Amino acid sequence: NAGVTQTPKFRVLKTGQSMTLLCAQDMNHEYMYWYRQDPGMGLRLIHYSVGEGTTAKGEVPDGYNVSRLKKQNFLLGLESAAPSQTSVYFCASSYQLAGGVDTQYFGPGTRLTVL
Amino acid sequence: GQNIDQPTEMTATEGAIVQINCTYQTSGFNGLFWYQQHAGEAPTFLSYNVLDGLEEKGRFSSFLSRSKGYSYLLLKELQMKDSASYLCAPAGTTDSWGKLQFGAGTQVVVTP
Image (cartoon, rainbow over all chains, first blue to last red):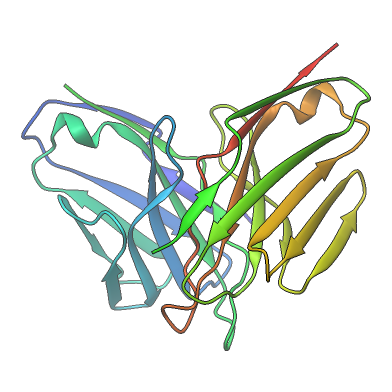
């Protein structure tokens, strides 16, 4: 049971390049999330998904796109990277609880630098 | 919107007790989480409070007062490995499933 895994762990991009971050979970969780974490700021929600084939915008969605074609995978895309997107990206997943929230389990993070 | 306020940094010696306070404002309320995050690592779950009162779990305890929009995390018998950032995360109810908002974190430094 690997939990939540993320690929890659590190990446350096030039401005304007594109890339996709992959998140995978083996806990059969319905919900998946992408966050970014910057110094002095809390984790900020980029996009999330409440089930296979569904996605929704979070707090800071601009410049990112996501897809959830399979229940266990959640992809985060940067179409044209900008230096402002230099950050640590965390994926998380959780069970669905009727009328409540459940614990989110986080992946190890992807450290992205955009030059 | 949601506002979360917690101290930026706290320093304490090994074996001591430290209390990390968190005040929040949420659109509705669906519980409050505390996470621990060591440098360069992912956040990991510590505690969840949905009702008022104190929840004790070993050396860590978490308290909630919904009417005051206030929570604290109490770390007892501090160990060097407790040096980490502690994130307060209330869950609102703006959506049916209650998204989390994370505070900026409190960096706890444990000294020998």
